[in-house]
Length: 299
Ligand SMILES: Nc1ncnc2c1ncn2[C@@H]1O[C@H](COP(=O)(O)OP(=O)(O)OP(=O)(O)O)[C@@H](O)[C@H]1O
Ligand SMILES: O=P(O)(O)OC[C@H]1O[C@H](OP(=O)(O)OP(=O)(O)O)[C@H](O)[C@@H]1O
Ligand SMILES: [Mg+2]
Image 1 (cartoon, helix red, strand yellow):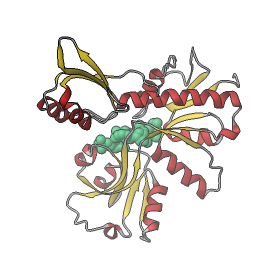
Image 2: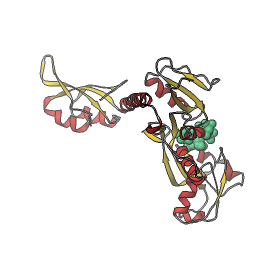
Image 3: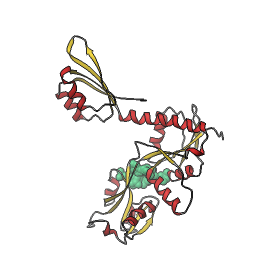
Image 4: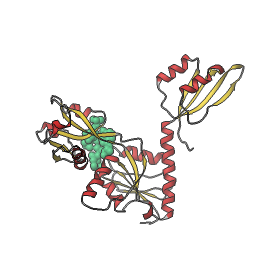
């Protein structure tokens, strides 16, 4: 093991795997990841990527086994609370919230239950994989409940008579619907994030390298959120067009050959361009409207 290389833990297989690997690829990290091996060495950067169960990632950071990890905030916060209760070390830094793994931890009840508020769940048995987050929520409201801890397939707990309600991750709500449940309270909003060991535990070379990787990650996220827009418009309508498009910087305006009244406008927009915006641009008289993806960006 080379002590100058950074170790980065990502989920081996599951909801965060593809996006984590894709992020590394977009940052120019060349690594040949294969499910059969648990560690892979980047060819062009001092990074070793470990493929693990997501639940293990916060502990690997807190115990100093790896320097970086990509993990859902839900798992990180649950682990933080578990460690606080058992008086173990809790030490990490959140470097960056990421643009994937977006979901929420919610309480859900049977479709036909008359739910008028959280008090309806007083003394209920609630199945969850996140007992500490759930307990914090109920404790704040001073409502007693009975936790029933399951590591997966929490939605089936109600149908099999194991619980009265559930507390699990929701994104589209399709899994809840398929199991005859409806979401009634969000208890925690989550997304994937990049976490690291605290800086003070790392040698300067590693800190420097992590900063460089973080800059690239921020550039990738920014580029994914931005679009390059080109269009032709009459000079007199320019202000109306720029009011419509929220840009990172002022637009570039170019003369159009053979047409002194019109210009070409180029700009980077930091907001999603919906079809409605395109239609509004068109009704202002814009033509040749192009919205292009941006591959890389550094400000
Ligand atoms: N439906 C969803 N949409 C978006 N993100 C989600 C969704 N479900 C889960 N996540 C996020 O992805 C993380 C991993 O989810 P996954 O279901 O793959 O976990 P797991 O089954 O515990 O995996 P592992 O085998 O690694 O322990 C969750 O902790 C959460 O942050
Ligand atoms: O609201 P939805 O879009 O339906 O997503 C919610 C489901 O996604 C997650 O499970 P996942 O599919 O990752 O499988 P798992 O239960 O095996 O972890 C989560 O635990 C829910 O079951
Ligand atoms: Mg897990």
